[in-house]
Length: 471
Ligand SMILES: Nc1ncnc2c1ncn2[C@@H]1O[C@H](COP(=O)(O)OP(=O)(O)OP(=O)(O)O)[C@@H](O)[C@H]1O
Ligand SMILES: CC(=O)C(=O)O
Ligand SMILES: [K+]
Ligand SMILES: [Mg+2]
Image 1 (cartoon, helix red, strand yellow):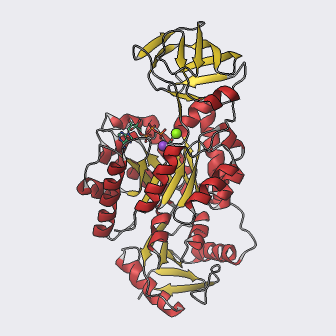
Image 2 (cartoon, rainbow, N blue to C red):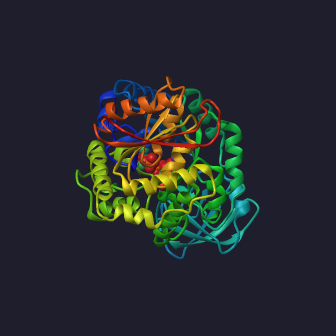
Image 3 (spheres, rainbow, N blue to C red):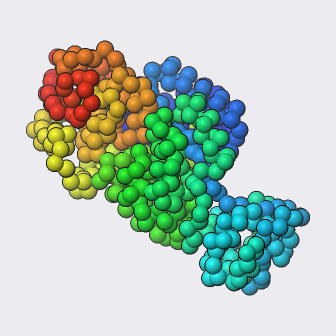
């Protein structure tokens, strides 16, 4: 498969996509990495989807990423005697540790640690922010609130407490079980939900080791505040706008998204923009203009990847959603401003050999029409560093390591090919030319820039650059 866009698509799987054929269509339409959301479905479902993706990867000989998204400490109210109640503005409502079914006056909040963290004056947001309660009085086992925004509240709806830093591990018992299952299965990425502090990443990393890369989901205000440290400790970042838009005022999400993308680009960490991107395509084959503009803006801002959630997981038009996303991406990438915009916002090079080579590549690309940048990388680190520059030409990442190829599926502009017969620089050059041609990325007469760290087999950064013409 010849890559035809640089920005990647991350698609969530669910009941809407059923079988190997469906997955293959999505990949052919532009999906690079799939998300298994462990908030839904059971282990057997996830295992089945995992196997489908690997089968398509084999059929197309095209590395695909698989990301497991852990549920995290999503707080929920208990149940009601009648399944639901109506809450009205101004009324009193109690949340307590009593497990008996709730009514118009009270409901169970089975999380003593939230009750402990709450203080009078703080707000609780229920059901994705549709209802708002303000804490009036706090007891050891209950809180009394006033309803600020009323509405229907039904069983097990989510609770967000934006103002409190909760003493919760980002990994619940369910998460730990899911994590060992997912790692055993062989996922490439683990996404950590509701990260609150850098320490959360350190704890998750201790469990995951080097079995998978770690993506921190930014959906809490405290994570926004400590973004830089969190990003430094993570392998990638997701702008999880669903919960984020409840935890902070919705109108501040666009600015936060921009800041996160800028920080991630500086650090050379892939960044994914997620949630509600083509939301209306759950029930309609065509998106709204606003949604198209949202995807286009994320691309123009320099995101590595854009995500589809319910659109592909449970929507009626999963294939159309991916096709639409690909079209929007290509349109922006091929537009007159994209490269200029990326150049203006390009992070400063550091005083390292690999950044020096990246600068050289940029100068060369202004003189020669470079068709492909080929980089040989075992861990993928140097290809990610090259992608940080957002070069004009696509990056062909040659790696002996299938895991590296799968992990880089989320990164901007990188197309990986697994090849383990490279041992010397000359072989890299001839193999690079061969592979670039076979992948449809270059044709006779094209100029290729080839970078590698020599001597081979020694860890270290890229230190050589060759210019080759395909004859
Ligand atoms: N594996 C699945 N099985 C059934 N439904 C799913 C699945 N994945 C997603 N969905 C449906 O698509 C919707 C949106 O998907 P998404 O992955 O964004 O979930 P979510 O509920 O918002 O969870 P989270 O906050 O954990 O991301 C879900 O609310 C659910 O209705
Ligand atoms: C993806 C996700 O978890 C969110 O947007 O909240
Ligand atoms: K989740
Ligand atoms: Mg979320």
